[in-house]
Length: 283
Image (cartoon, rainbow, N blue to C red; front, side, top):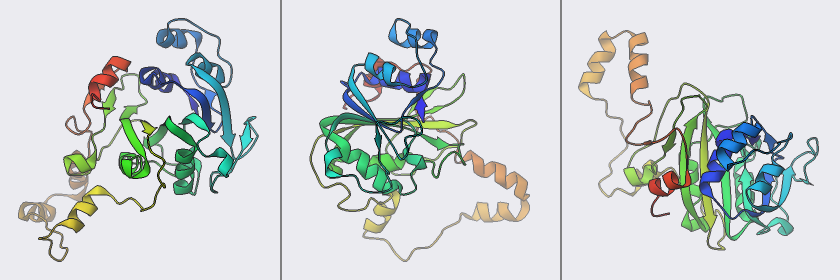
């Protein structure tokens, strides 16, 4: 868990009034050389092992780190597998999950707690692995999790959902809502890929009063003309399965889940506030 140049680029583009900040886990500073900081913030600064000075440079008035252990000197020791105390509810202007919730086995409880910590009008920011990071934590998170959970039903409004591969030539990509486009957003990537999410808390509602469901299933269940479920396989695919070797079929299957420019439009290698505002004009 930590803040690297892509995370700093994301926070800079968001340009949030950070205020009193809580980080889930004490955020280390990864690869934030004075030159890297200067390229994003306009002037260099010495960065130590942890990210608090960077967050203060971005406008944080205080930074509280919350972790299950004090091994890295966290401000507060809190096990996010358990519900939080009332004293942490609506306490922070910004809560930053820079790679912690994927390590919390009781993920849903940890996610709800993070949402509860945010004041009305405040912000929740996630930077988490979504692909090619199996073994890193307990989970890799699908983009649909954030579309379904950070919703008006739970008192939140999504600002943006982005993907970026951890490669030198990686580009930022906007993620479309599967519910809006009517199908799942599936993708394969070459390198570790992270999801970048920002949402604002606008209403003090009970969070998770109803469990979210994946949007394509909800649409299917709601159809009036739905008959008994059956899997329909096109005749050409059945014929191909009989004559095409399995190793070739395996490669062809990959074509249906590669990154799509339609569902994951590229925004460029550099993310700026102007780029973000253009990609999400109604936010």
